[in-house]
Image (cartoon, one colour):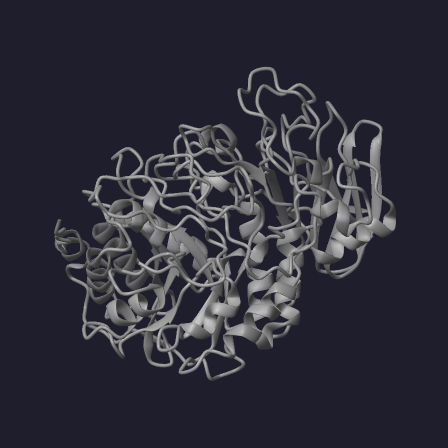
Length: 601
């Protein structure tokens, strides 16, 4: 069955855009780095109530740009609104700033569900959408060629003889595309297979780099790392065991393995892009995706990962924040808006994460320049979960998420300080702890108190600089449902020391970042498993509404497109169907994503 992918929507969206040369970034300049954010286009269309307009895109781009982000990776499927929404994005970027860049991230899980990624029609779609947008003014170019990336695709042959051949003949070296693009996909395969993608890979995107994905409580990996028996409890760890876990959170070890294997690819520019992420929690039932797990995000994961990327910045070309708006997996830093995946509103409504965004500018600037920027205004960011990890909800049909044992009940806090001072954290009327604050980046944590609150007070020279206590927040020991998402509260003071009100969310349905007491806090688990050195680990889908997949967090990824409906419960995360016609006679992709060699057609 032939599928026609028209450009009508794109033409509407990009009409009136002046011809201009796309922005060019020279990868060979070792001192030049970029920071981009992964933007899920799949939530921007569909239901008119949540569909993005040109103004929505403009607001997102202005917000990202003002917080040190250089561009968006546009995660796209073959939805009927794809061309229009991507067109809006490019048009908005061109109007906001000549320095804000965009590039396509082809969601091969969604495209497989919508077209069938082992069919020639898939290759036709990829070439069509790529050629439509790579000449736009705001297109990011590397070494003079437009950057194109993917989410997955390691099981797709695009109608070619096998995966390696298909991506070569049907995409990168196809006459419609050959010589035009700089291709840096995220293929979830044994990284020793990179070298088989000659004339395909210009680089590698390590999408899973932001989390310690293979250390789980369910298979005993965390216990083994800590010298415990597989079924030992993780609630009472020694300081040494806590230190082992903390030292691995945000680790660069897996990145080093990716870089080593990427260097073996012939005819490649060896561009390396990796991820930084603040959190991970998803809790979907079988009809909504059958995804119910966490990755350990304790020990100030977001800040710690940034610090490790800064330390290794000479090895990294682009840092990609995962994500701007994946609400179904709780790793968003942008405003809550769009058509959220069905069910995710339970743990995202009111749980604004823009405190993470407010910290981003400092670390993104440091990563890009190699020099820590001066802190001109004091800033306090706190986060915590809304209930104890061992709580038993009154009306949740699902079990606790896999790996919940890894997290601990802690309040996390980060202070960006202009000068030395003192921070007092409180989680109850009689539960307080005071810490010395040094000029620069400071990380603190303390135990949460059941029935208690969160409060942080920064003082200097016997004067209060910031006093942040989100109204109504309670660490509820008797929740209705499981919620391992985090509430993030943030406040800052201007250069004179006067406290500034926390910025409100741009989402009218979302409470101000610092005033929503119900938003869940980040975990403090020192027992969380360290980042793995296993190169074959597959990522979990960034789309909570995709096909039901195994609750194992190491299961292969499904589509990141939340418009894609639920599919069978196959642990290979076969993506669900969408509004694009599907040829039901197409052969299913192999279900073993960890195979050492790429599957053949």
